[in-house]
Image 1 (cartoon, rainbow, N blue to C red):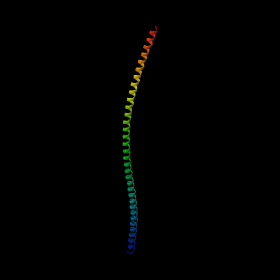
Image 2: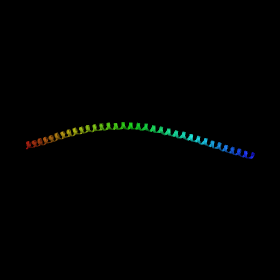
Image 3: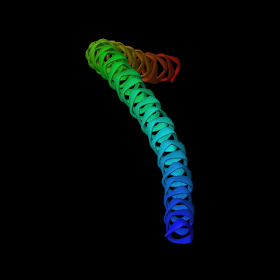
Image 4: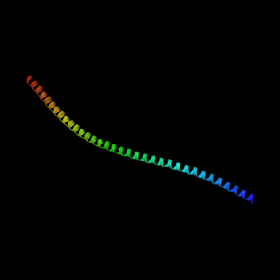
Amino acid sequence: LNNEMKRIQSRIREIHEKQEALNHEASLRHNDLLHTRSLIQADANNALYNVTTLQASITTTQTALTKVVEALNNTRGTAESHRARISAIEESYAAVVAQKEGKRKKLLERNKLKYALQRKVKE
C-alpha cells in the first residue's frame, strides 16, 4: 500500500510538472500572439497613415493639375488673341503693300507715257 501511494504521488508530481510546462508554453505562445497582434496593429496603422498621406498628395496633385489646365486655357485664349492680332496686322500690311504696288505701277505707267511724249515732241 505504501509503495502504491508513492507511485501515485510520483505520477501526480509528473502530471503536475507536465501541467506547469504546458502552462509555461501556453503563456509563451500567448505572449507571442500578443506581440504579433501589436505588430499587425502597428503595420495597419502605418498603412492607414500612408493611405491618408497618399490621398492628401492626390488631392494636392489634382488641385495643381486643375490650376495647370486653367493656365493652359488662359494661354490658349491669349495665343488665339495674339494670332488674331497678327492676322489683322498681316492683312493690313498686305493692303499697304498692294497699295504701294498699285502706286508704283501707276507711276511707272505715267513715266512711260511721259518719256513717250517727250520722244514724240523731239521727233
